[in-house]
Image 1 (cartoon, one colour):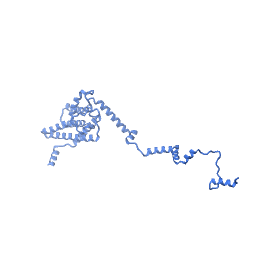
Image 2: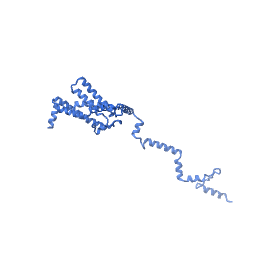
Image 3: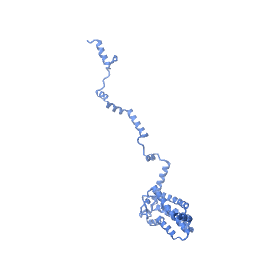
Image 4: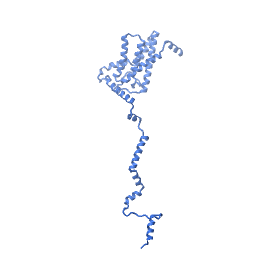
Length: 281
């Protein structure tokens, strides 16, 4: 029989260098071999740590914070759509009303429209407000005029028509608003900028020429009323034919009204014209 000292030495050797006695519990069974292998495997330990609820909560919060603070921001148009301003809502509503009303009023857009039989008359009104007939007519009257006053008026009218063409072309090239979808591109003598809609060149020309004629020509009252009706009918025909939206014509009238003030500021008198010709010589 081994001595107590030998038994105590064996147990003490298993306890380590501290010399303290350690006893395994007889009531607790050892862990299964599979768990022992998982505990000894570092890859399995990392997978268990990744699947733990604490790690999942932490990764979810970190992902939410990353998406909210930085990683991938929403596009600007999406942010505007999610948080629209009052001005944006007002402009969108105005644009929707403009498109709806323009489509409802385009009753002469084609021959199959409700007022398709009136389309030839509307196209005749369209030609009466076109820039080419006005330029040719002003140049012819300037050439045939015998008085200095008549030449002065026709020369400034010609300058006003050229100024109108330049300003309208610049605004159309900057805004680039397309014409209505129900429009037919069968207009008289179109140019590259005429595929754009804003503003209406016919409306600007009609408003400016109406103010010019009423201010510098001696007309009877019926003729003055006829000039005003012609200007209004030219603008209204642009919507009936489907050439422009309502806002295009409205802004065109406003722009043409203001253009006349610019023409008056740049008015060429005979004295100014003679001085300019003398400087060129």
